[in-house]
Image (cartoon, rainbow, N blue to C red):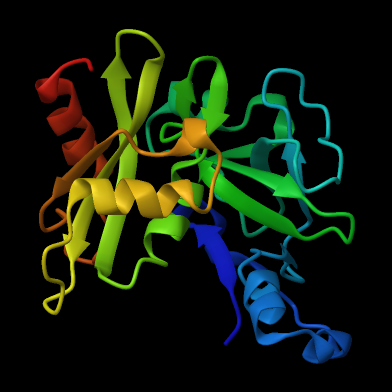
Length: 222
C-alpha cells in the first residue's frame, strides 16, 4: 500500500510516500507511522514545499513547524474558470496554495496536519483536528470520528468530537472517550464535547465538516 496525496487542482495525486528498502527493518508500528506521511513529489511535479503563507518562507524541516503545502509545476491547474480573483489568491507568490497545513521532515517528506479552515485555536494554541481524530480511531469501540471547533467563552474555541460507535459497542459514554483521549495527548487538546451520531458525508464518502461546524455553532459557546 502506497500513500498518495493531491488535489483536483494538481491533476489528482501529485505526492507519494516513496518507500525505502531500509524501512522494512522498522517495527510494524514504525512502518505504519512512516507510511502515514504524504511523502515527496511525483516526477511530473516541478516542486513541492511547506511555506509560511504570510511570508512565503520555507518552514524548518524539523517535523514540527507548521506551514501551508504549496505546489508548482505542469500538472498544477492554470486557474479557476472565469474567476480571476480566486485564481490570484490561489497562486499568490507564484505557488499554488493547497489550503492544507503540514510539516516537513529532515528527509524531505511532508506530512499533513490539518486543513487551514479546520485548525482549532484554543487559548492561542493551534490544535490539529486530525491528531485528535487519530487518537479517537484507536478507541476499540469507535467506528468513525470527526473533530471540529466549538465556540468557548474562555478559550475562544475547544475541540468537539462527533463519533459513530461500532455496532458491538455497549455502554460507551462521553466521559469514557474523554478519559481515553486523556491517556494519549496533551490536556488542552482533549475534546470537551462528545456527540454521538452518524457522520454526514458526500456521495464519495467524505465527511461534511461544514455541517458539523453548523451544529457546534447552533449549540452555542461552552
